[in-house]
Length: 398
Length: 137
Image (cartoon, rainbow over all chains, first blue to last red; front, side):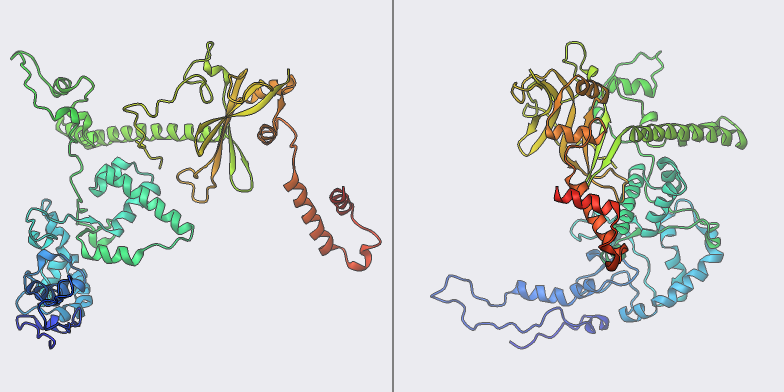
């Protein structure tokens, strides 16, 4: 069979790309072979469509457009970028990319004040829009339709991830400046858990670099280029003076406690003052009210203080006092840990350290059966094969 | 009857864990001892988190004052127990093969590097002579 011609609907940009696979497939003239059970290698319609796809959409996906996401949903069935203007050409865009970046930087300096509070997505693509006015060949920013990795699943939209700069900034804010996780979370608009994860993983990364391990940086860069990311707006730079930091996610969402998943009908007397504390108690006696379970109760407190009509100085003093208390609490915890480590006697040997901890034999109690006693206990059967014994680790030291 | 400080093996298959116990010498290994002084986990633990160049470590819990008392009244540590007790300075180390070997190597190299071969036969330094004697002995 001769090499198949490509369909004429392809854009010229794609036609410059080399084909994914040579098209020459030897086809046997026979339909079936009487001596063999193997199905014969003829070209089916599916196979033809598969190679057609590889040469159109597949070719576009194989070489991601720089500075853009790389999702199936952004292309039509002929491999054309849906959001691109009719005259847009792929190669030209790649060549002019560097110029447009320069132009975008210049354009954002005067026009930064226009960024609205609620338009975080527009802020995300602000630079691209600014560059768009100048460059005809510039790609418009991705719409929600373009962020669909699975074309059949219309409800799945790819969410942005933290960019490398933002992660580094979070790590430096927590480790170098000593900000609490909650404070960093409020400043960067990233949830508490994510801040914790970023700090832990960054710490691990630095340790690996210190140990001389090789990191998969090209891989990480390639992946981050193809997914939407939240950029870092450095507030120390002059050009970012009037730009608000971009919020990555909602930080103060109430976590659904398992005890609140049931539907309750609690008859309450009209005269009774039924508060959120009572609502929490109605679900479970140990359940805290929603006000205490949200990740950032201090934000609610600050808002309440401003509603009470306190002046800025008073509110600042109160906030500082609270931060001081937090700091004191943290220092006490750290001192305790340090004191514990100092109380250990470490004897370094050839392959490992022997760490001695002084204990008291009296901790077993008078009858010698106290569970706090030192050592493996005598006459006590193991319970690890019993029903309901959790052996999966429930916490990780980090 | 002799009172010994020794290890009693607990734990699971491939996961040993020892109690450091004071017991009569002729009782069974895991029988109820006179006193449990501490524990010894021989499996090296990974370095503590945040420790970039941390080394693996072995966890030992020991009542030091009580151990001193038992040694003082004549309890005889087993070889393994002796090694552990020597680490915290309760006893003098019993086997110091590595230490002596190190000394020998060090003295040997010092003698080779410092003393010129011509005068080596006449006067030898005291330290090198001692260690040579130790090797021969």
